[in-house]
Image (tube, rainbow, N blue to C red; front, side, top):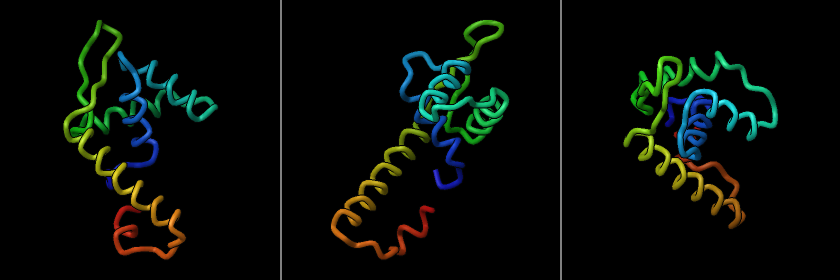
Length: 107
């Protein structure tokens, strides 16, 4: 996930949170999270990039609607990211706020 933007990471989490993830549903989930409007074009452009980089699979539901599902690559990357974030929070909770070499490789 190091190669993804924060918005693309948020797209992955939005997809994971939905029972039937499709473009406008994903957009609505992001708008709920951001508490602001999200540009439709930005959503679809970034979904396309996630498909191209094999984090997401796209399938036609009908002539106008596509579904988006996470690949094994995405779920593994999300698990790795969560592990890294948890370690960083634990360091902060322990009072260690000095940057670690590992933290610098994940930024």
